Structure formats: C-alpha cells, structure tokens
Amino acid sequence: MTPPAKTEAEETLRLPSERTSWTVIFGVLFGLVLFSGILAASALYTAPALISDWQVRETAQPVPRARVADGKCNAKLVIHICNATLTLSTPRGSTTRRVNYVFSGPQAANFDLVVMADSARPDIVTTNLGLDRLWNRTITLLVIDGAILACIVGALVSIIRNGRTAFRVAM
Image (tube, rainbow, N blue to C red; front, side, top):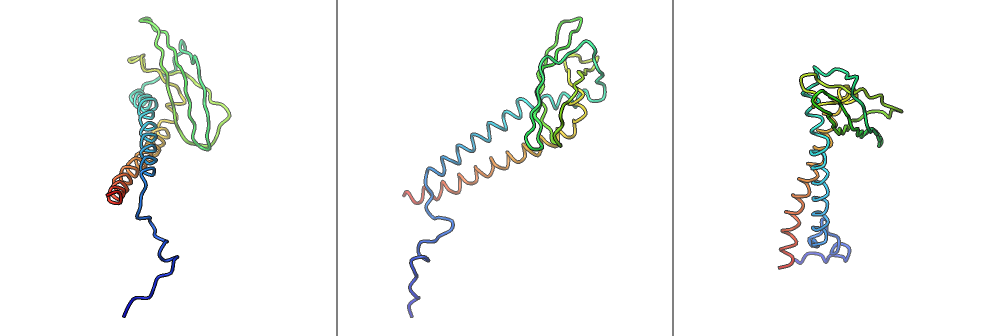
C-alpha cells in the first residue's frame, strides 16, 4: 500500500530549515565579534578597578588632599555605570587614576564621592562608592560577563552547526 499523498503545506513547512544561508552565518559572526568586543572592554575598563579595590578594601582611608577631577554616573534601568578621574597629590608626585564602576540597584539621584587610598599603596586610589558597592560590582560583573560569554559560546556552536549544514547544502 502506498503512503497517503502529502499536502502542499506539509511539504513546505520544515522547522528548522534544512537550508542555511551564508548570510545567517555572517550575521552570527558579526554578533560574535560584537560580544567579544564588549567582553574585552569589560576586562579592560571595569575589571582592573574592581581587582584593585579588593586589594585595598580593608585598609583604605579617606584622603583629604585628593580630589575627583571628573565624575559622571549613568543609569539604565537598574544598571549604573560610573566613571571618575581621581587625583592624589603625594610627596613623590601626583597620582591620577581613571576608575569605572558598574553595579546594579535602584536609581539614585546623586552619589557623594570621597577619594580613598591605602597609605602603604597610594597609587591605588579609589572612592567610597567603589568600596561600598564592592560585592555588588563583583556579582554584577560576573553575571554580565557570564551572559556575554554564554552568547559567545552559543554563537560558536551556531556557526559550527549551521556551517556544516550550509556546506552540505552547497555541495
């Protein structure tokens, strides 16, 4: 006995599609490069200030001769991104450090910054905001970077799977 004839709708509907275009693969590659850039920026700008704040968290004290040369915070939903340039005058010269803080929480109107430093390591200047939100910054960085890393791994898996399919169809 012969199987029943398939209707046109049964013939055309296939999920996922057996044919993968190269434009999809290039789109995924673009996303891969984009997410890799965001991850690199996180490692370059946010992680060093976080690591140095962990090093001086116990011994940092307010420094009266230091100042915030430039400071700005932006809030997007519950994520705050703060940048500041800190300047500390020491007998050995002036120390300037640019810090970047990323943390989560409800939006606040203003943050009052107090420059802090360890007397044994005056080159590592930070702020009370950075030290007060140290755990929050750490968890926020791990969650955001973990999500970006998951997107990168997902993109690589997609490229491998779809690339094989596209290559098979092309042959």
